Amino acid sequence: MAYDKPLPNPDENTQPFFDGLKDHKLLLQYFPSADHYQYPYSDRCYKDWSTDWEWRESAGNGEVYTWVRMHQLYHPSWKAEIPYTLAVVQLDEGPRMHTNLVNVPVEDVHVGMRVKVHFDDVTDEVTLPKFEPA
Image 1: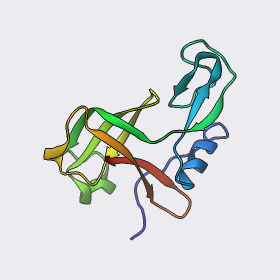
Image 2: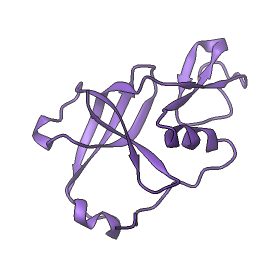
Image 3: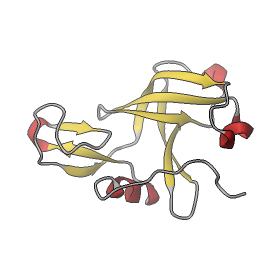
């Protein structure tokens, strides 16, 4: 079955992040002047406003910061997946990512649960980062 959900539309600044996902690497912006990782992309560091940064690979580990089980259908392409679990994951490097939790029963989900990145190859060109129990 073809993937029918909305897909990201990277620009020249975010394309390296999505290229990394395709290679099953979770890349984060790193600002050496503040020893700071951040997500999502910004042209400046949230801590010291530096514009000097690089992409660095994350270990892809973190913990559930908060989560919700979705029962309401907000987009028709998710109908077959209702209910599904959305979460904010605090990566060990510091940034928080909005994501889906996969491969875990809802009764096992809890704040502080250790998770790891799961690369979901949704099309031949697009891979999405989701998280599963570590």
